[in-house]
Image (cartoon, rainbow, N blue to C red; front, side, top):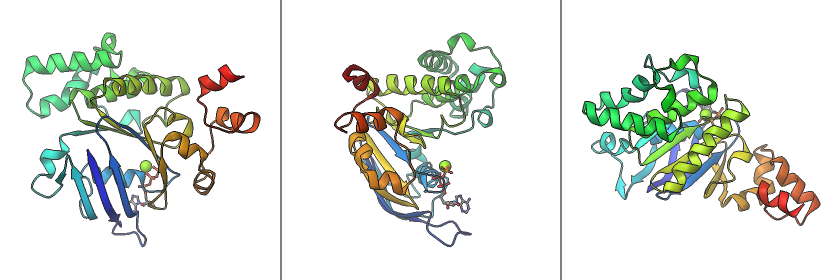
Length: 262
Ligand SMILES: Nc1ncnc2c1ncn2[C@@H]1O[C@H](COP(=O)(O)OP(=O)(O)OP(=O)(O)O)[C@@H](O)[C@H]1O
Ligand SMILES: [Mg+2]
């Protein structure tokens, strides 16, 4: 669905390339995780996808169409993003106003707006909070509302840029639960950016970035076994993976499988 071909980008103030010849393909309905330590270029990649940065070198295709100045605004409507900080993304006085905001901006009719807002809040299990003030929710709840706001726009691609990094483990699980549900429905392409290797387990495809380059990509199993890339990017294997490597045959095992084997 999305093709990035040889994307290179330098910030005006930067002496080096924030993205250095990146080529990636995201298939429709796929859950892609992008991992990498601070400054590896993950958010820059997202900003390019979202059209916040446009003066890149290389080619981006969306559904086979090359992104250019003419179709950019239209094609970008297929994308929605949830950011890292749950406190910086609310505009509405209530949860439902907040979710409806993007729809209203896009001139969606009232009836349709109400229906889509309800549906999105239901999907993230926050309908009962519709009249609450966003600022009084927990971190996990806030991110769920932010995801509802993105879902209400019916995006074909949902991008989460470290959307779990500022919330507690319980909140992270809530967000991952929602992603799992969205993924099972098969309609939305998920681009999930994280520092945390334990959060990529369910993705179909994972990419490790370092210094603006892709240093490894493949299935989660392949990524977990690419010790050099993990070491180079200072990523820490999840505890259950370390344990299965040391105690058992070292092959990839999910947490549940490991528990069963033990
Ligand atoms: N607005 C900017 N101006 C100049 N340089 C920037 C700007 N934003 C990012 N950079 C630089 O570009 C490189 C990539 O940054 P980016 O934000 O894409 O990394 P990241 O992988 O998202 O990191 P993090 O995990 O900390 O969010 C870094 O070296 C960073 O210092
Ligand atoms: Mg970032």
